[in-house]
Length: 172
Ligand code: THU
Image (tube, rainbow, N blue to C red; front, side, top):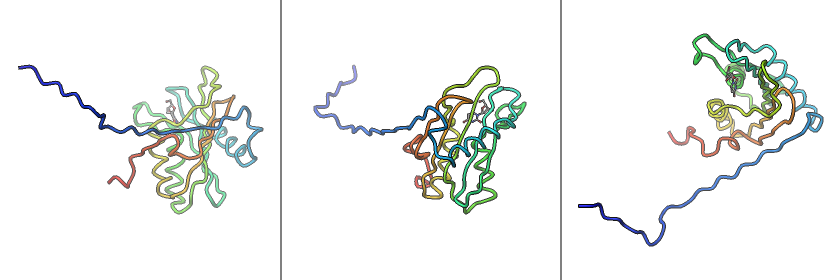
């Protein structure tokens, strides 16, 4: 006996559409001085990354509301999954050391030592999830600026903007 085919006269499902937008700057000169400074700090952190396996060095710098700047970089491991991305290295340190300070913005500079990285490099999915935890916690948007070792700089007004419909504490 074949399965019956049911034709629905009206579609019952609904669509959810999520719009997102980024600003892109051609050079750091177009950015305000504090942002340029944060990108510079991220670039300096990148130089100190420990990435002997991927040769892909990432630096992150975040600015707290009290003006303090915390930086971090990727830390790799011979047991590959044990390594940690730059963004999480930085934000976990901020969370550990300054648990009550809001994070205003984060800058990320990423690039290979093998080939030029001239496009903005967005944070990976795991880092987006980790960053969003702090954005939700502080109830204030955390701006993101990210770039390669040269070229354009992308700006996201918040973490939610690059990770909409987040799994966060409100679902637990
Ligand atoms: N990496 C980061 O530090 N941040 C990201 O958002 C993406 C990837 C690091 C992890 C690894 O050490 C190297 O870049 C290559 O994936």
